[in-house]
Image 1 (tube, one colour):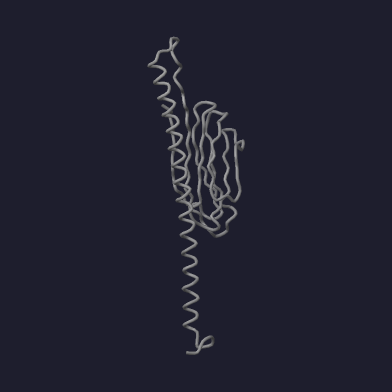
Image 2 (cartoon, rainbow, N blue to C red):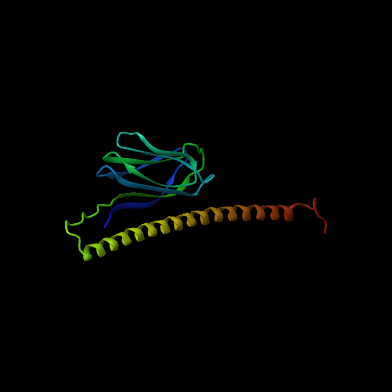
Length: 179
């Protein structure tokens, strides 16, 4: 079974703030996953970077709404995952993110192969495939949650504008329409 360490969090990144979170990698060649999605605030975008223990940038992005990345860690130690809202002077952002460190050790087969080992090996492969499929479903659900939040924000903004226009129309002293 794969050993997975993960943390799914929601945080608020204030205007002009940079927040960093850290994950420890025990061995080289471990898979590291990083998912984020801006749920609200401004244009729903944020700058981000992932750095290795030597502060070398592994991956980065600017003004992105969401991302889902998996990379192989080449260094043992603490990797940093930073969310940067420097671009915004007044809008805080609410960001969901998930950091995963996974090590998938596979048992080495015995010298003499038996039908039981072949069956357990195929069962193990099926479990790994199922685990991957469940991870994809989870990512898709996060994506749809993000889309729903953004669309709800658009609907609220549109509703507020319509209410403002209607109030302005009926509170005006007869300049526009005489009844």
